[in-house]
Length: 354
Image (cartoon, rainbow, N blue to C red; front, top):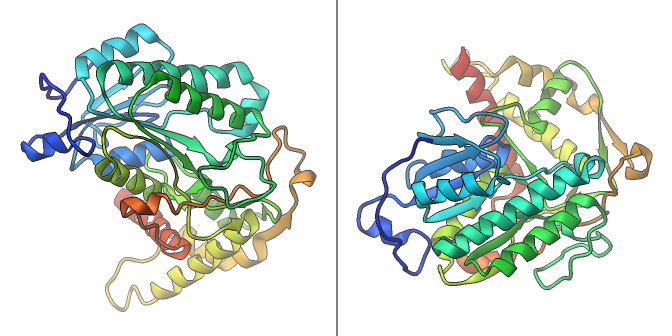
């Protein structure tokens, strides 16, 4: 198990990790779920400020994303304890999860192990060592009957995934560790290590396939990049000795169908803005984006949750009130800005491979 530089003490200052930064050393950050969409983005953004230790399970993390990596089962208490003793993290961002509501409904035993038990073990180690924990939870802890939920709203999950995330939140509280329970909405964006659902939609549009979006399911969606940036900013601004519950949602509430329409519009504008690439000696647009932009408008249809016959119940409106997070100078960009950034990342990734 490779490890990075270690120090003998864990300083206690106002913000997570700031004692190391003040001494010229980078604080040690452990990221779970590092091969996932959000976890890999956290690793990418944290690389310049932290010594990042990336933990994954099924999929390995490349050295380009983190110099220190391990593939372990987070439910293996002995291995996780050994890792903590060897790496001595000064901040943990816990992104690992079984996050598909359908998969959790089909296999609740595995969901409980990954979503609850691993969180309980991790929180206990953080409490024992004094290491702050940022735990990523979900907007699906709510029943969706009201919408615009703030942190005082009581959780009322309607599916297994939501119930297990509520149990995991409680496990973090019971452990007594310091840190943040951060509820996140539906996420989208560029996949650092694998094709993301949004990028899958672009490729389906490019092939002329119709994509259905629910018009009766509302979320405060944000990008992986914005979520990772928000988590790391909170790590720098939230006092280390606090236990906080925060919502980190977008400024706009959209249905899945609305999201597809906005994605199609930003895609059209993205391609139009780059149409003069050859004239101005700029690189041409990813051909998949050009094909997707041509077909997108005609390849979107509206649907209803009930018609999809999903195994997991889906709440109607779990939009989040995230004003409390703004008390820590966190400012979320508008959805169109995040879509533009995600499209640009997808385009850049294509050209890097050419």
